[in-house]
Length: 452
Image 1: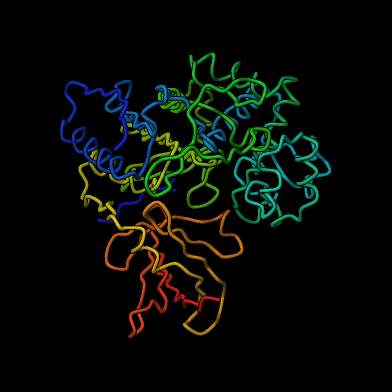
Image 2: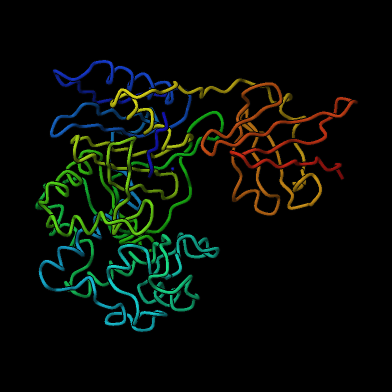
């Protein structure tokens, strides 16, 4: 049966609830799956599953045994759902129209006279995405003003004509946040608290700010042997209304439930929000189906944080992931959880690596040239070893982009998060001659170059 869910050895600090009357197999199987993945260093963070107001599963897997218990996470692009809700609230207050043009607020943005608020909500504007731009690293950690970010949008060529297609762009929601501030004469943080957090009693949800000491989890990166605190930190002034909210699993559960109970916006605007502009994206929300079950929600990714919230209205089921470290596809974890809940066929994953000594790994180190069809040189990659794993990336961007590949078999290494493998080949004299890099159906031969 085809199943599809759309959205990407340490101390276990836990809060675990089993609700009377629920299927114990679901809870036990889910707990077994998550503990298996956690004990094999595939993730750290929190998972919450609820049906209606009942918590079925709520557990936090800590990356650092010495850290304080904390369920506040950077939720990244789930922020867009909050921003979209505030836009619809302003529409219901007759302070804004979905058909208003962007040029009313920011006339210097290219094509602003053709871009509507509704198109911004649905990513149909063609405004280039600053956060996925090639030059993003130049601004990622800087404090950026509204004027500076808008100027960057003005300087970039539109990706397409407004309304021609759907293409995800964080810039749409950065601008929507500025428009919210212009209309309300308040900063986005205050509007968030007034219109959503206070009415719903969300005590762990707020906009991250440089001005306030942030009491939240750190992000972690798995280096091959342990989780280490990530040094990269995207500045909140850059992600803004597109991705700067801090929240908790329980707050996210309340938020999405109240959204679908029409306690935040009207049923008509909720329907608009869930009207798809592409196969998966609506106007501030993703379509997240599982088999015949209809779900909606959003995912988020910023630095080492990954998050997801999805709600199946007919079943009253809510799933929340808040990960502050991930070394496995988030979608695959969700697939397992929902397969157990809906009693669908599911094969327990194989997520273990094997142990190799440093001297054993040394033989794979070197510079490799990727060849397309074994003939056409494409680029060079560097392979080195550390912490019992291989690390690889393009030679020119090695330090910035290197990813780990864990040993899983004879001459075979796997990156579990991106489902890619390196399989090494030998010459007759026993020396490495090259390797195959494979990700899905894509397969490249990489020839090992002679050492200088």
